[in-house]
Image 1 (cartoon, rainbow, N blue to C red):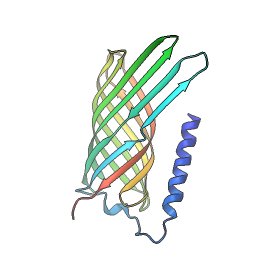
Image 2 (tube, rainbow, N blue to C red; image 1 turned 135 degrees about the vertical axis):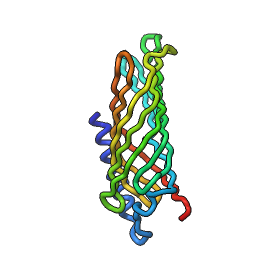
Image 3 (cartoon, rainbow, N blue to C red; image 1 turned 90 degrees about the vertical axis):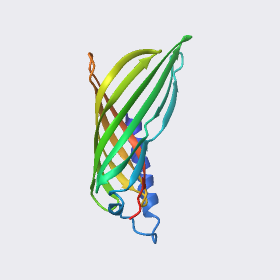
Image 4 (cartoon, rainbow, N blue to C red; image 1 turned 90 degrees about the horizontal axis):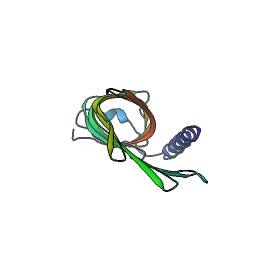
Length: 191
């Protein structure tokens, strides 16, 4: 967890220094584009990892979580999100794998702090499932809530950390927490 937080901090420092070094460009005012007719696409950082412990198990992971949508009104957006996570463990000739997926509709709001910095909240309802070695372990309806910060690098690209919570309504209820670094692209409609 410590390495994840350090990575987020370093990434944000690089983004802030890169975006502030481009003096003379058109001023960024995201307030102008976060309104009706604007479409967006957002994806937390795609991750792939391998961990090999000497004389121990080898872990590999791949995750991807895109979301798409549009703004209904100024700062209010409606979207759909899809997340998928694949994990595999190998140890002493045996292997085990699991796949997690979540498909949800979402409603979100963005609150301006400055012209470049926004606080973001969202909630959604959908279907969640986990399959381990081909057998369905959990399947059922789920609710998701999240919050984060968006920093606009330019008029159409924003980056920032986010936190999410998902609760699965099943006989054995389950909750999942997560953090991510989001990259969002905005496509304003014609005025």
